[in-house]
Length: 370
Ligand code: SAH
Image 1 (cartoon, rainbow, N blue to C red):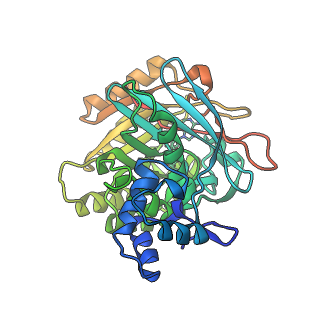
Image 2 (image 1 turned 60 degrees about the vertical axis):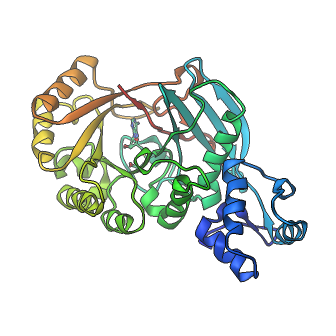
């Protein structure tokens, strides 16, 4: 199992995709359909006690107890905002902490999920980058964010408490923790687990070209590209990964991704953080529209969330509107994200996953499109 955690030599059942669990049962002479039963208990009922799995024989439960544990990240705190946004601080086994945010909007509920502790990419406007990279999250730690959120939200009968969407827009670059992210996303889509629609699960990337190509062969989910600049010269400064995979190559990979999907209606989401005086001029907007004219996409303009000692500033409302108007006039589908959960510091870039030996780390999370 890929970087799965073993706890007292036991495997963590939350680390298994359905396929891997089926092989696990097969190897032990059990029927592979047991995997479906166990996956349902784990991810639909969110149980963390094998004795609750009442449709398994006592002997099988005992065998499982001998070899397996069910261990999700531990919920340290849960906060609810007046606008319905929820934020959890989760502690991992090694003492690192991550945060997960749930944002209800109409009949949709979006969970923002992290893929790594820290990030190895060095995007200059990103506070996570300041903290460096600690490690990849395991499958259990990625899916455990969904598991923990669902478990808390489930008992509330009120509307808007259902997780309908997941965005991999928390800490880390999901493409650089590829196998674990793929397994976790399989569980998100699996009808025996979270059963989310593939259009409602979004992987956001800075543009790791070979991984974009690999993704289409493994999984069909919505793809978001953190573009942030309309030319290589500027993007090299904002997203250093651009020096390795320049814009033209990344956009070509996005087009190939769309070409491999079964539906022709799909679009890439282009994320563009507006930085005052850096990438938000009329000229940039025209250049962006020109750059994207052949790619089926929708542009999401993101207000910059300032953090201590950053050299960047948020673009004004006027500037943002003007930028958006130019894109729309030039035929680009464009939305602008708005902030949620401000009263619990769950707004843009305010999330703070506390790291072992480190005082504070901020992450960004999904914002709702206006
Ligand atoms: N590494 C992935 C996913 C994590 S970041 C990626 O780059 O897409 C999720 C989104 O938040 C990205 O579009 C990222 O560029 C954006 N972001 C990072 N720092 C931000 C900040 N300070 N303010 C607003 N958005 C930010």
